[in-house]
Length: 587
Image (cartoon, rainbow, N blue to C red; front, side):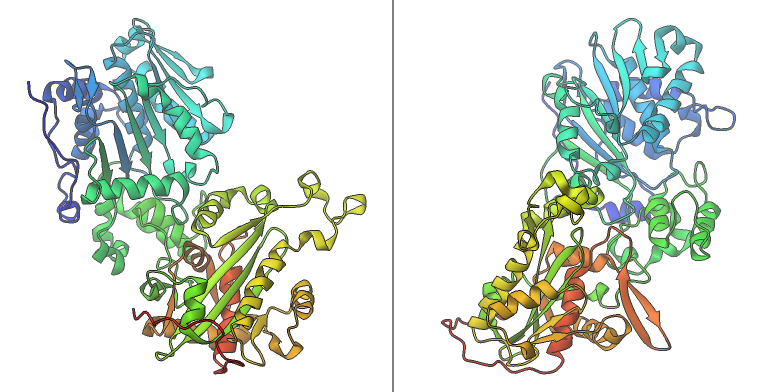
């Protein structure tokens, strides 16, 4: 028999999802396998649903489409699975954990290999309980299954009495993932793994058994994150989107992604109750329109529950709206226009070559904050503002803010963040206390990095004679001293008052972004920082900038506001340009 020819791309997914059609663009590759697995799956009972119906009685077609695609990709004659990786992205309260339990129990029952290992990897103990509970209940609800399968609650284990195969539910935060030989793996709540610094290596360990189990699979289940996607979650999401859209040719991977078509996302059509079905294919069963409406109303009134503390989180969880710069209602006014102002590349060399004058802004807090530098150049000829930013972070940030480690690593890889090592990691908790004090000069690597760049711009003759460098008055003594030692004059440095006093520049830069008279390099650093910014009203017409959360970092953004303040003064460069001129790149 010839091998089937298929594609997992679904380029017309937007039309399909609006029309409530299947998001599986192919028929089961091996229909007999799909039918046999569906017979098992449909017979399992959903114990936590009124009346304890079977999956066959209570599920919407999308569930059977997914199960058929997974098990129907197995070539029993060759002992080889032709589609090995799957991703289901779906809103909360659509039965995701129950579906996970049903799929893995079906795999345990259908498996032929003796002593096989199957696992559900959960990011936390709580999520592990959510996955194991329904699976154990399904076994106990069926007298036939109770004879074939043995449930061991204290180990979160279900064992097949005939084959000896074992299904384990493993919580990643217990450190028991390493060395897994599982040939069938389901990863639950991938978005939480995206926040964990070592998640990529952890999942590599957890799925390593597939190399010697050609009949195996790995399935990722997730809702959207309660913040911008990052880490392994972002990597997988981007990859499966590419496969779905046809930009990545990988017929061995398939993603069923319940997310919003671009036009509906841009128009905020997800706020219309009539559209809630788009990312809630189980609407009317495990999920209702009134429930989602109530969740939205609660957060608007400040009565969010179960961690649903903002409209962003509710939309991400119950409507699968990806959190980004445009989602937050209290975002900086320029956030929605920022992406359209990006240009393919804007290095420091490009900025120096293209600018007739440059001003700088510097902002930073304590040791567990970033030190941000922003340079804004006025482009020769066009007079557009060219924005370049960089940041420095001490290694202590990786210890104190583990929830942002994955994004910090991405920024280092991008080249927009420099990590500075603490002089004595053993004394991190006692810096500045008694005998463990660290000399200030030992904590100058970030300051030196800022000053080196500022010296380079000055030597290029691009700083104005006065008010060239804007500084937040708080905590900049070390920078001022270092600049003075490098020959900068006092009147080249200017203290920029913060808070509501930045109102005009906060609004003004937003207008420049809307008009596209400001350009930048489109870096992840600034995309992240701008997404962390919260704009709050002050008085009748004033505004101020704060952070969306304690772990959020906005220092480079604040530095940009200081630099923008100086650029609005229409400065002129103090000296000639010492580097050889290059032709201007027009974007």
